Image (cartoon, rainbow, N blue to C red; front, side, top):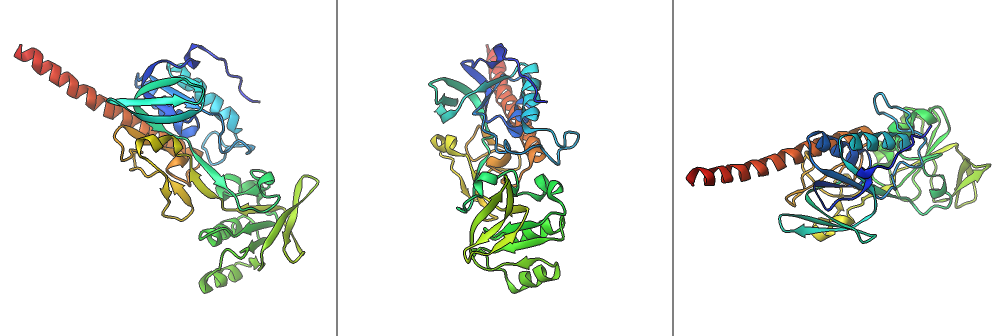
Length: 329
């Protein structure tokens, strides 16, 4: 059952906050929860387009395994609101420096000011241009063995080659099924060592380009090759190119850069989520392409704690300065 949310006064966007969180997924809500519990004024602005929306459930999250994504987010929003945080539906169009803080502009014309920013906008999965692939994404076209592997165990799995991590992905899915076929798709050229590994694990390699994903009765029937042959499969795993949704940071001089893994683009940050722009933090998939929900939530909480500490340090410096002035007077 999907949790029902009640709109309250905390859904209204105020003029200014200690922290504005851009993005309301696991990372953003966890950061906001940490900040609200520290008595910080915080607003979460969420466009409502979570990456995991097609999934039936969130997996690998202790005590919440299998929870539908919408339910998890509804619970998180309620918890943030319970501590006085605001959670607002809206799309952030831009951010810019404004004095000693930041100005955040929404696409609908609203604007808000923040002393600090936490950006948790996630990423976009760019899929190969193979007919039928995108339509099955999040159903029987999957990407993560930890997110979906148990659900497809012992099935006939195909792995579509997309990049340097594809053979590694094959091995992860081979852990889950003895029937795995690898389609390099004229994109991936396994090394001699990888070829030996695939053979040793009983993985069949089908050469040639993939023409389409064959779907029958709303289920994958197999992979159609350009030569017309059909390789029957029930599930297809594909490594997407993951690109951070970092456009809202462009006005601050922050841009996505290639990830060291070669799997896409991310916004760099230190282990606390602090970026090279003072006062701006990032958390979740916008900076860590491989983060599952649990790791994203942890990163959001870590960033929230460090933002609170940063604000305390600023406020303490101001208090000391004021105290000294009073003492001199």
